[in-house]
Length: 252
Ligand SMILES: [Zn+2]
Image (cartoon, rainbow, N blue to C red; front, side):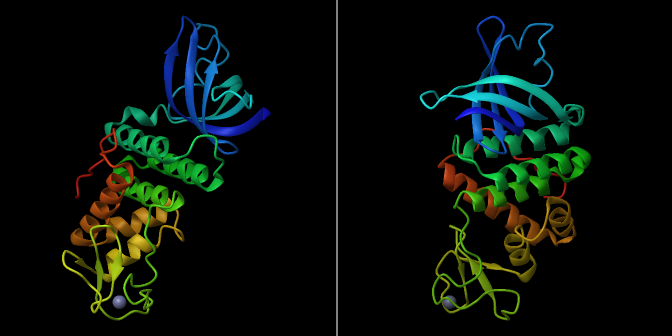
């Protein structure tokens, strides 16, 4: 409570009254924060350009225990991705990534890892618009993991046998994303090849650049299974489709 200084990424802005703006940000220190920026829509406002979506800012805000809406006191641009959003692929990918964080991050709950994941994905995607599809899938898996919606991929959901890299049998994945060994698999489970398993279970060890490279190098079937699984788990967690469309990419 009180005055907070933190890095933040602007997710969305809304008009409020004549000259004010409501700004939704993912912050490093306070999680998802909604704030009012007085005078931000005036021509000579010191906030003006910094409080736009796709901008990494240094944010100062005042928080009161009794109010959900914080008061934005200052915002300086650290890096703007506005230029990158001019490319249709990057724009689509960025909108989807921001949407996921907006949907999943609980308000005022600090999660440094979620902020760092978002910052790394936005930064990578802005420089590599062609990777929009793989970075979107990577962000889905990370967001699901950090908010508790990603199933455990280490062991069989039936008998508990370890399914890690040294497992030599056939792995299966259920509609809900539960992994099974051959003996425990149930109706509707589809086979999960070693390559797809590695992609699903390696987001913790790999940053967006390395993960998306493995994804691009993987076979078409692995990419399809991983992308569809991530998407299906997002839909299940939200109990509906996300509002923004997922970047499809040319290859899938
Ligand atoms: Zn089993």
